Amino acid sequence: MADEAIAEIVEAMASTPLAHAPLIFHISGSKGSAVLEPLRANGARVAAIHPAMTFTGFPEIEVRRMSGACFAITASDTTISAARAVVGALGGIAIEITEHDRPLYHAALCHAANHLVTLFAGALRMLECAGVEDPARVVAPLASAALENSIARGFDALSGPILRGDTDTIQSHLAALEDSCPETLPAYRAMALATLMEQDRRDPKPARSGLHRLIGE
Image 1: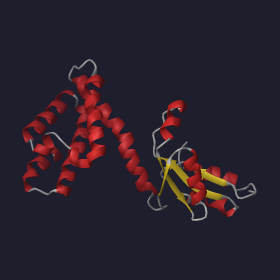
Image 2 (image 1 turned 90 degrees about the vertical axis):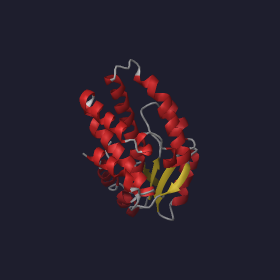
Image 3 (image 1 turned 60 degrees about the horizontal axis):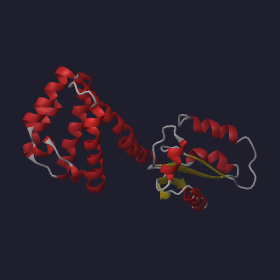
Image 4 (image 1 turned 60 degrees about the vertical axis):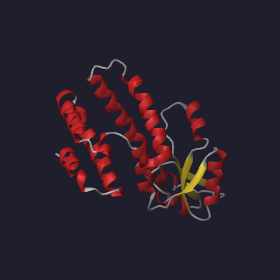
């Protein structure tokens, strides 16, 4: 269900009298509790409670994953304790996100999870184009190690040709992709440029200008 449908459901529910101040919450990541205002005005306690976890349709696995996961709560001072109790009952860890910061919070999660799937799919496609019979077997150990290192060390876990300033290697990558796997070239350029920009943010060096010109062409 799209997040936009929440307002429609709330409008329908708000026409029914609410007794005993029930706790009503949604689990959208990008929306805060403001979308539930008609229900609050009708006597309900309202909150937004979003699990920072990916769900793909396997309940047995996903229930286990919720234990220890963070849940983003947006609620009023009078409702926050009830929202925290829900998270606690699920074995999660409650964090508070303001209404204003909710879209930014959700963008971060999409970038970390959804875009990671796209990134991995692109790497598999490149290996297929290179004639590798089982791309996942080749790249999975590397990707797993890189993810573990990134969680532990952040951007300091970076390795590879951009870190080394290896222009010739990056140029060979771009040429090979353009020739043999052009559908993956835009994403490679975008990620390489993002990597380079993060390097510059942390440690600006004029020597990287050649890489900027090459990747940005």
